[in-house]
Length: 514
Image (cartoon, rainbow, N blue to C red; front, side, top):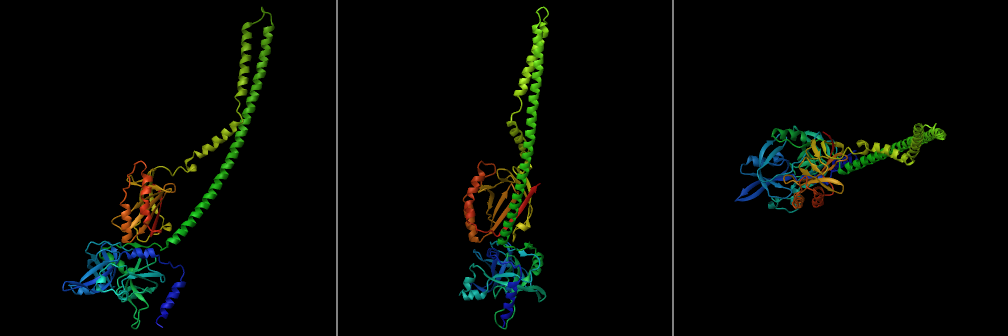
């Protein structure tokens, strides 16, 4: 009978509308910052694990866990706190900075040479129902695997278990989240994650079930954790954006592209119709103009010939007179005028516009419209000075810090006068593989549409080392070097081949001129 409430809760969760499903890549990315917290004693110089729980990074050198996980170390000064990372690497010691027994929270500072990727916290109140994942190191799993004491000091991946939020309930004077994602002894202090891998609470305890396994579990909510962290000089990464899967984002992007294509086709059809009407008007005007000019020139030629004929008749009459009566001067003047007018008539006829002038005039009218930069689509080319702002509805942000970007672009792919972008497959891009963060960023820019995009891959330590090894094989060319863009596009191919097919985060920015 004790399983009936859990079955009912699961059924209600399944039929609840619009529930997001956890993305394994996001849960794995969050698990990189989860650690095993071990209370260590010493016996004749040999280190012994006294107890252990789970913790997770809220800063590179700060770990949150439950107060009851480190209680023994606080009571006995000879006991120490050990931090064992999940993604490989040596165990280090930690120091308790703050402990709040009231809400079962503790903050630990890592004292050794270990830096962890901080987990992001989900902003706002968690939903009354929705999928969640517990991440931690339950002891019953260790026992089932036959692990001994020494195995606890080895780096191992944490256990992940899925369930659903069953409600937000105050418990023992602090705010908790009731859920069904199984935890056990050793899971205490581990994160409770939403489908995007963001922390919604710190797993603390399970509901008593008459000696059997608990069916419901409690996590200290972020409404308790965030003030606790800020009171101890830790500003957590809080992300309040809606949790959407990459598949949903891709589907929305495809719909947006389809709408843009339909709009573009409609605009193209409208432009074509406008061009057709413009050509018809230009053709009609050119035909009328050319035919009128041809008729005018022909009429002028005829009139000039008639005048020349009259002058010729006059000249003939003057020439037929007797030599004594003939006025030679007048004869020459009249004859010359007649000849000149004949030549003018001939010139007017020969220089009349031909029918091919119609085509030239139409072409000139059509070319005048194409010279308009906006109509010809030329306004987006060349050097650009831009401010880029995130478009939330086109982005998926789980842990990245988001702010506006000042983006100066040159036609040869140089950004902010110092960073060369590569060109390959019609795309401008630059791959960044930092040594200080376990995340690879692939930035791309479309200068025609003025869209800047960042794809972030949150990788395991092994995958990150492979990406760094591939990146170390080439040196990115400087801005201004001839052929730098195409060479860099080829150089980046090996790093891109090391990345998963799907990124964890996508940040899309729209850019406008400064």
